[in-house]
Amino acid sequence: MNRGVLYVSYDGMLEPLGQSQVLAYLEKLAPDWRIHLISYEKRADWADANKRSAVAARIAAAGIRWHPLRYHKRPSAPATAYDVAVGSAKAIALALRHRLTIVHARSYVPALITLAVKRATGARFLFDMRGLWADERIDGGLWPKDGRLYRTAKSLERRFLEAADHVVTLTHASEAEIRSFPYLAKRQPTISVIPTCADLDRFTIHGPRPIDPFVLGYVGSVGTWYLLGDMLRFFRHLQAVQPEARLSIVNRNEQALIAERVRHHGIDPAAVQIQAGEHRDMPRLVAGMSAGMALIKPAYSKIASAPTKLAEYLGCGVPCLGITGVGDTEAILEGDRVGVVLGGSGDDELKAGVKRLTALTRDPDLQDRCRRTAVRLFSLDAGAAAYRAIYERLAGHS
Image 1: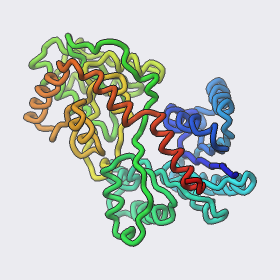
Image 2: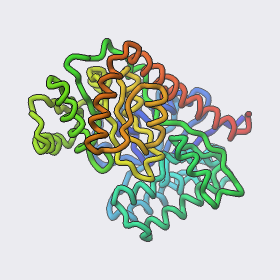
Image 3: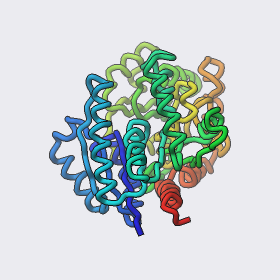
Image 4: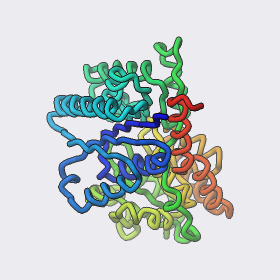
């Protein structure tokens, strides 16, 4: 019985995302499947010998065969084309040598590689979309609308969806959108929704949430998508009704920018704590919040977004402040009463959100309700079980 899988990730296993969103799943699948993993490692990460040794040992202990390749960034298009060419040759050779009958692509660049393997070997192709990548480039202002790069990427997206033996997307909202694509009218792919999960053994309840003073928190970057200005305005409205409220921001590389924006919004820096934190520190830092924020710029592509921080907040029993138009966030937070979703970013919406959020945090069952929602929707065990079922189906065992 051949139970061989080739998993291709353009994210490196030496990066936190690779460890939490790739390795964490594969470790749970490896006891039942022969897994070969191709990843693309960045030069700076690879130069850290201690990190490289630790990750290699972790992968080997799980019984996974790791085939790291070098990631190239510049010039962008030629560098990516080179990576795809090298990866395709490596992937086809591995699939033939080890008789790997399932190819699992994490997002679009790996899909180019695994589609080549499918065509060369007949392997079954799992397109794990992660999101509407091409549309994210437009919505984030990285590509011109209707430009050549966007048209090419959407054409490739169509090829991937038409060729896929199974598709995974992060949200029910994006599943409905994908099913509406005209070119899929006569052949609807099999689609599973598997949201971004978290290690809920780590992100768990650590004691009572702080109520007085109210600690409003945020974890992560503040770049293209996350609405730092709106989060700071929300905090100002919170302070208007709870003057002792505190703001806790955990961020690695943008602390000077955040501090400048805090001053720009007229917030007393003494009420704000901005700190870096290693991944191992995140559960403790999240657990110290009364509520967490995940205010993402609403855009078409964000219907496919499932923020990892949402799973982490709820896993720690911490309610979340979200905004409408982002994935399944509204259905989850409002449906399970584990957070508040803003209808927009005007002052009236923010003031109403403050009132609703502070009232919600007084609910004595809130912490346990958040945890129950996280376990039901975002546990690694549930995610791994969903992938296991897909593998079984593709292998013809169910």
